[in-house]
Length: 413
View 1 (cartoon, rainbow, N blue to C red):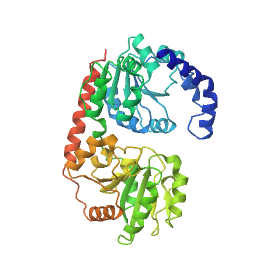
View 2 (view 1 turned 90 degrees about the horizontal axis):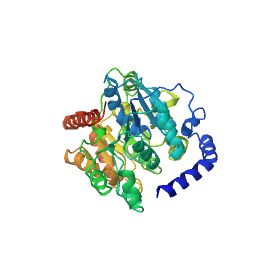
View 3 (view 1 turned 30 degrees about the vertical axis):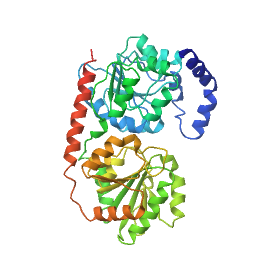
View 4 (view 1 turned 90 degrees about the vertical axis):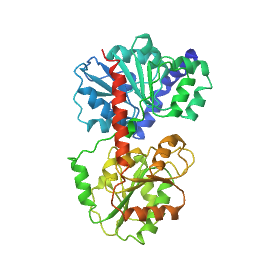
């Protein structure tokens, strides 16, 4: 099956210039660094002790606490971090890491990944979440470089896709040295995929630190000090219209209300603004730096990596990808960890265990009824006291971080 996979990979390389040109025109590729996807580098080569791959912003933010801890380890001289998206590369520049450098993840072509490994010569490869790459795994194994999957996530949908070619799947997953699943569902599927070494460490997204010296957070609190605020986060297409209609109902009661919308994909900003304007809502974007006015309805966050700053302004958030029926929800842990009561729609199959945990702590409600959502938000806006169960989330987060570091440290030379 690797033979056929490589035929497809080679065809992909042949047509890749057309695909990449299209993506550049769409603003989805970094024109100055696109060569990195073919292992063409402008930066000086330095061998890396550890290589970490996180696909995009969510995976990157979940691994930052691990990276910071590893940078304090004297055994580690350098860390290579790869991601696949422009947004994650932009976030990396704001992190101020000392031992870590960034490159774009290469195309999973046999020749290209061989060049990548030979060029960087990592001693350990760590992949985050659901990043499974057959050629990369095969060549890392041939080079005797351990492969760790941390915060591993395999959904029923992705498992079924792998099962179309079960022998191929077993060959790919069999090359994993250590898997640390983030939930019981993933644990089950990893066992079925013949991963030999699996340890329970938990979901890294339970962990998070609040930077009390964060200047952006302070300026935002000052900016919104005269308004009531709630958040709608990780929203997808059509969900913003529901939120807009909900805002109009809420503002009849809370005259100084502003709804903060943090879309899952900020490239939809203009589309969202048009939809909200059609509802006669006044909308301003975070990047515009406009002052808030009495008639401001929606504050649209059109930047990545700042969600936590906005969760700190309120105690209630809607988490999207849950009203529409084909995404399976988005992770609610960040707003919950920061004291927000979470409202979500019924479609959260990708995060069933987390939502069950939050429901048990009375920190979440599932509904797609606009009247129920209205009543929940109004009730929460009247209470400022944080939920006492936040301490349980923080405790779990600290334990998860330490467990992940414990297992990673076993592979450090």
